[in-house]
Image (cartoon, rainbow, N blue to C red; front, side, top):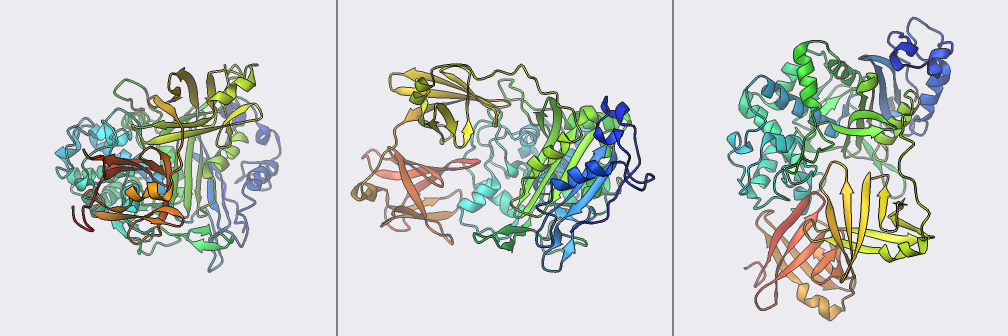
Length: 560
């Protein structure tokens, strides 16, 4: 459902953008004292959200900002399908991972005030965190280079259901039981929600206030973000709050609300109107605010000095030649994105309540209507090569360190990763434009290897492997009960008609598919281990942002 257009003051386009875009050359819509955009451009913006602008669909709120002022804001679709309430720019959404920039802002502010150092070890404030034989600093946590396993992966692997309530105490308890990290701190970038939950607890330790209380007093109230707060109780009544939805297999909308009583990594309740006030804060003139903005936007680096594409709760990317700081958010049925182009003092904020919404793509389509395209046209182009020679690189590649794989196929003279076409620079080197990754192949005596270089992270080398098929009698040795002290959970592997099935408590059994010797995949990756007698003794499990969780096999049911 359409909502009333809300506009703020007019500005001169040729001065602010360096050129006169379409909307600066046309006659603005009726009320010139309020309107900035011509009707033709308003229609183009609104058309991008037409699929959600229905009385039968959830949707989103949008704000477009220039020089710290809102030049257009609008609501599309329904805040509540049950009660027929439409979305407005004042509708409150769960901002999901947009929360992280506010958690980071709290840590950065305390550092600028000298109340903590970003070089401090997390154990200075939370001694319950294991030392892991490696120091984990606040900087590691801010930049997702800590190696700490992700809380949502751990929750899922421990048998928790999606609707189970999880608190910050639950997260800290899970961290305390961990015996290892995904990698040595600083060696890699790997997004970890756990790190930001821990940072929220650091704020509490340093200030004596919860992150919720601190953010209210230092950010939200001073900036008059009166509809914004960190939520620590999912049953709380929030005025103007939207519900969230996702479609079932039959295409029917179902309620999809988060049930988390933890915040720092998530938990921010906010509006596009309030986030517009936060955006203006990044263009303030005061020296201390400039220091804050510089600190927030300073990207991290790995131990080998590789520069990351992540700062403090803000990611860095280049879009059509324009540098942008941004962050997406995804929590149950909520979707969000905050996309800021500092060079143009131009931002787009989108908060949605439909799980199928691609918020990032929509925000970029809005940006296309306003910003010039400065794409470097001298980028490498596909070369004329013998495409028949590319087929030798098709296959499955495996990295045993991260327990991750890359599957490539050869179709009609091209090499593909999933549905994404790899651009051939030579017979051995390729670009994956979508992932901003470079692929380099090498032949070796055992087959082939693949080196993947992703901007802002370390290089990963994969070995080409031949997948295997096992008969039922060969699968039998992998059955049994296995226990993880880190998760405090038993898994049962059994042989059924469908093959080898894994049963996690309170969940539906899932298949384990043979991959290579003692390695199974889908939906998790499992590397079995053997004892001195060549018998299965346990396994290491990897899922998403959690690697190598150790499970031990029971000698008898329930007994080691």
